[in-house]
Length: 293
Image 1 (cartoon, one colour):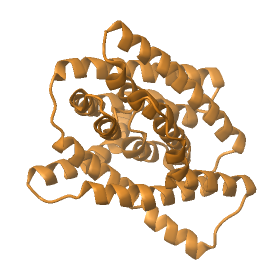
Image 2: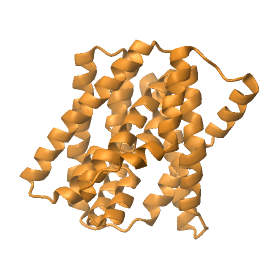
Image 3: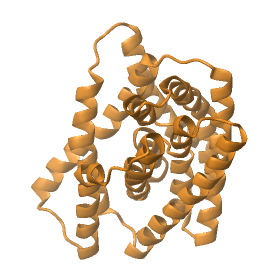
Image 4: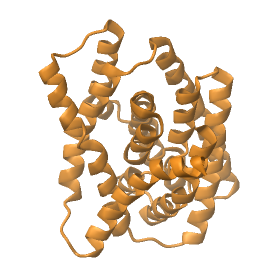
């Protein structure tokens, strides 16, 4: 009973905030996703990342181990998902990247924060940053046949990650007044991302939901298993291991739909994956949290 209540306390705020965005749009109110997303990804999320890394209470060796483990885990996920896509006779350009990269930002960061506190958030930021780098390089190559290293370098969240890692490594801290200001800006990130997630899901048009539901379940199994196997292999501490499993198991990101639209893949099946996997996560995330807590 206590475990169920703990999991409910972690997941309920996440899905309630996403529901706010969903209901807001369904009621016909205006919500400018492009503006909110740009503010979140340019200002709020980098601020959140920088402060989280600067203040994380974890040894640099633990962060390095988690970084290597994340790359290895994504390697296993890529192999597993590629095998599924080829065996099922699906279009690689359309299905591969969405089934590999999850919603480690909008959903993964708040879940890690509520489940494991500030330390968990710091670990989740590491996985999120690696996922973002892979998405804008390998992910774009999978969808469009060309990578975008320049896009990675230009991303504010990458710069914030590198700067935060430098401050952590050197033991530096910004002046308290500046830390407080950056912290306040960063606190916008999680509510904005969750509400925007609900808005984006409400606006998606989908078809072939039965196939999307099956693929979402397969993605969840492959990603969670890869996360567990790598966390066990590397001997990660319980929080770092739990965060890795949780982040890898997040549903298909809305960004995958946007990339499909931009680079000419079939966007409608990707939209179906976003909706189906997000709905599945309402049940799956509490079960995963019950396992890792």
